[in-house]
Image (cartoon, rainbow, N blue to C red):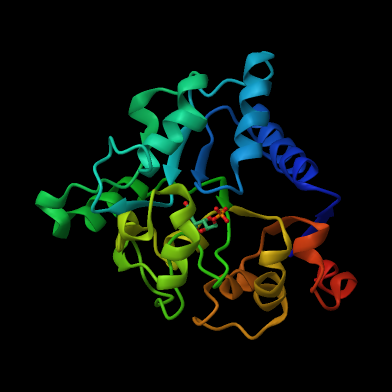
Length: 249
Ligand code: F6R
């Protein structure tokens, strides 16, 4: 595990973007796993800047999003489908056929996890971007989710719904269910970059990197990944114990 502590969110975004840009220059056909939420917004802006400057192209890149709400239409402004279009895809030259976001069509809910696993099959992600929930969730693998899960439909934890209500008009409007890659899918990525910032993530970041490996803190499973880089600001890093020791592991 490598932990990069940055002075602020802008530097977090810069460092994450530098890793993705380098990988993309070396491998223009890369597969990248994407997250939504606040954490990767700065990274996406920096990738758009690099695209506008002609440094990178997404023409041959394939993307795989971690998750999507179930119970709101893809066209809803807060769907992760809309999020990706609004915050990245509409500004770059990605081809629609290479964009993969879990389908949330209620009329065939039972088939959706298997359908997404088929898309992921044989498409190992060169880099997987992750955020982390205050309760340690990754993707929407909430505390208690099985390690052997591939894509599945999950009930959202109440804390997660409260945290995400900032994007909706009220808590009632936040979906109760989501479709998400499972831990097994996430761990299959070659490299994982986890981004976090702010004091509210400090406790869970320490639990994730130092605590016991437990499904109660799903991000703690990442300690077992051979190529994990955490890029976090000073506030998010403020409760990490043994930082130097962890960086040598
Ligand atoms: C989103 C996702 C979630 C978020 C997490 C943190 O696709 O997979 O696990 O990464 O909820 O969200 P933010 O970044 O908004 O704090």
